[in-house]
Amino acid sequence: MTAGGNAVRTERPGAIGSGDDFSMFTFDVQGRCLRERCQVSGGEVAGILVAVFWAILVSFLAVALARLAQTLRATTKLVADVTEQAVPLLADASSAVRSAQTQIDRVDAIASDVQEVTSNASALSSTVASTFGGPLVKVAAFGYGVRRAISRKAGPETEDMPAKPSRRTVIVGRTVPSARQRKRDNRNKRD
Image (cartoon, rainbow, N blue to C red):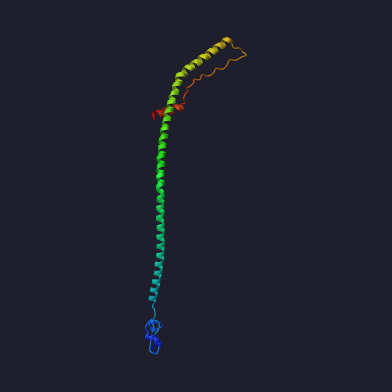
């Protein structure tokens, strides 16, 4: 009989339950164990712990990198979608700006025409006032003088009826500019 006392174990080396699968145990002829379990040093335990730690760390890093890769794929897809939508919007915005510029040019032309018409109307009104204003004032003054003369001939003033206060003569279409207005006009002429 052999170390285990079983003939099957010796005939078939490496079989389950044979002494070959427990390499850390050695038996003598009577079946006593010559060497107990092997002693593991502190350095070997530390090495095993470091190896386990590194295996866990590598696993976490692999998971983190996989998630980062998914995030980058999603970001790439998002940027591509935004680009697809932004290009037509930019084209529409560009055409809108061109249209607005055309409208602004038209409004500018209209504004300059209105300014020219206003200056022409102002010149025309001053011409009409100077042409017809003087003679009309003279006709009005003549009419006033005639009325006054007729009213004096009609009857002398009595003590019961006081004389009417005289009216101020107004020249139609002419105004006397104030001192401020004259200064402002002189400044505008210099500029």
